[in-house]
Structure formats: C-alpha cells, structure tokens
View: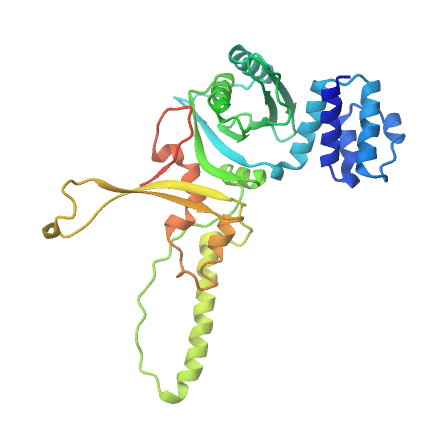
Amino acid sequence: MDETVAEYIRRTVLKIPRDEIKMMLQKWGFLSEAQLETINFHQIKDNISQDVVQLCEENSADIKQAAVLDIIYNNIYPNKRIWSVYQMNKTGEETEIFDLTDFKKKFKRLLRSALKNVTINFREYEDNAIWIRIAWGTPYTKPNQYKTSYVVYHSQTPYVFISASVLRSNLPLLCQALVVASNYQDIREMELRSHSLNSLKDIVFKRYSQNFQTYCPRPLTERNVAPETVDLRIIQENRNEKERIQRLNREVFGDGPQPKIEFAQYKLETMFKSDPKMDVLDKKEPFRCLVKFSSPHLLESLKSLAPTGMADAPLSPLLTCIPQKARNYFKIREKKSFLPGSFVSP
C-alpha cells in the first residue's frame, strides 16, 4: 500500500470519535469482521489508527477504498463542511428517466477530459442521494486528497448541494459536468449557505412548516381610562401585547424549529421616490442595494427579534421570505450562466 494512502487512512480514522470508529469501519466494509475483532477500540485513537492502517496494508488498500471511508465520514458528519445550494434549469417540462450509470460515465468523462489528474468517487444512499467526492490535481501534480469537493445530488430533482474545495477556479468545470451529466441547460447558485446540509434540504424540498405573513397591523385606538385603573390596564396591555407577538410569530414562522441557515443575500431594486421639485435624481434609475445576512442560526435569530423587543411584530416580509426567495430564484430572475449569482427582490 502506498505511503500517502496509509497516511490518509490514518488521518481519516483520527477524525472519527473513538466510540464510533468500529461502526464506521463496519459501514466501510473493506475490513472483515474477523479483522475488526483484532482491534482494541478502547485504546487511544492514535494506536487504533495504526492498527487499522496495518490491516489495510494486508488487504492492499488503494486511494479508491480510502476515498469511500472519507465519503462515509462526511455523510455522517456533513456539518463539518460549508454547503451551498445550486439549482439546475432546463427548457420544457419533459421528464427523463434517470440513468445512474450514464450519469457517472458523462460526469467522469467531462472532468477527466479537462483535467487529467483528478480522482472521482461515487456512493449512493437510500434517499436517492448521490454523493460525489472529487480530489483535484493539476497537469503537473497529483490530486490533493485533503482538499476535496463534495457534491450531493438528488436524482429527479434540479437541486445540487456543493461543498467546494479551496480551488474556486474548478467550480465552473464542476458545474458544467453536473449540467451535462444530468441533461440540464444551466445551473445557478441560490445564495443559501450553511453547515447544516439537512436544513438546506428542508428548505429547497419544502420539508418544513413556515407560514407566510397575512396579517395587516391595525392602528391603536385611544380610550379614556380612569386613573385608578391605569396600573391594571398597563399590566393587561403588556400581557396582551406579549400574546399578540407570540401569535404573530407563530403565524409567520410556524410552530416547528427553523432550518439552520448561516448566510443569505439578495439584491434589492426599487424606484427612488422624492419630491420632483428637489431634483435629487436627474435620471429615473432604480435604487440598488445588496442585502447580506449572516448568523450561526439565521432564521431562529430572525424569529427571536420580535419576542425580545428588537423589532416590531410582525416582521417585514423582506426578513421572513429568505427561504422562499431562494426557492423561487428562477421565477424572479432568469440568467443563464455557470457562475454564482444573486437573486433579485421584486
């Protein structure tokens, strides 16, 4: 077994929590149960990794088998990476039967025709998710197994989740390979990024319950209140206001937990309105603004604004519509390109 393969397997094992190493090696299936029984999984992780490498040497492991173990680890711990959502688009409404063998063949052929030194590995999962691992090289260097790109593609859907390597220059080539292999015309980034892959899936596949604002605030009416009842009325009004905020928050965000989004952005275009006599603008051009949001848990942060008194309830639709805007990106603005883009708020 090559020394670089042995070192890669050792480092992969070291990333796994000790209590889960045996389970993950069983999922890998490269080592037999008899071989696994010879490993003491209660010793320190460095010794465990050395024992695993020694057994892999007996089985003559190569980079292909090592890559499969890495895919299994990333599938169990997808939150270790930052994921971006891409949506593919095609003309017409025709549906095609997905052929996994044909998909793999086209994907590999396009990447390898443009870049000779690249390793590509596939693994299929029960939820129709195809996990693709790509290690990139250059015309003069071998693929770097420690800086890989991961792609999660759900067949029969236009959505792709990509965790790209440091080499952003390879992203257009990767997107082109996905479009050609899956028989689409173009692909666009949806400007939704998160460590939580499952939350991104919940958003684009509409698997979470977020209500949308239908409430229109009414002006408060003044009443004459007797002085002796002022304190009681203030307490009651505070209680009613708190209940109103909670009710409106449920109407907007629903009762369940929000998908975990850490980054979102979109472009806002609106016409600037001013007194014609002021001559603020010589030309009638729209006012453009790039709005960016970032937080460890963006939607939960927005959900807490009204209850904590940091914003009025209900929140503006510009804040609560972020997932919906991303899903409806192509309905808002169509632009054919392989490069990342933004979506525009009408």
